[in-house]
Length: 182
Image (tube, rainbow, N blue to C red; front, side):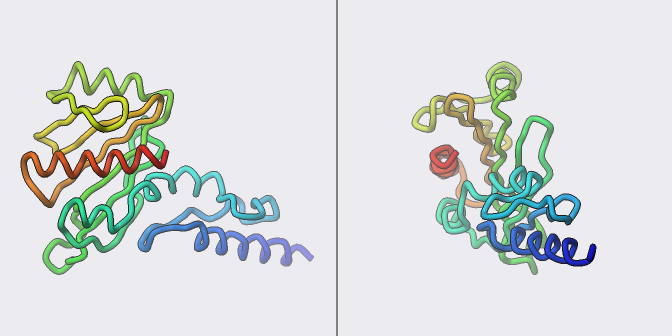
């Protein structure tokens, strides 16, 4: 009789991993333990919920429109301890670019936002940016924008696409879209 709960748990894990609105190329973690303790209904497992938000904040079409570069795979990326998740949008042309990123987005833990804001305003060479959330700071050297609204903050980085002022405009658009979904 033990095989039935394990089979049901594994089947439920598969359904949750493939049916949680993921973008192509992203992967969710299976339900912890694989047994009957897996959640029922649309709520993802704790591991999947921790990794999904960053990849759900921007669409492939939005990144392509902002960067002017065709995006292929979208996948979870390595995050820092201050982040709840990070998502990478990879080049569609894997022949020329292999696994290189067009853009990425990271989401910060609410209790880490104040310390991140301090880092961005006092320890990095940044330019204040208006028109995105409550605050924004741009590091031109890294092509990355840190923006936040209240205790929610993201970084959006663009490694390919427009240069100069057009890149900042594209980053502002992506950051505003992401913050609106948080």
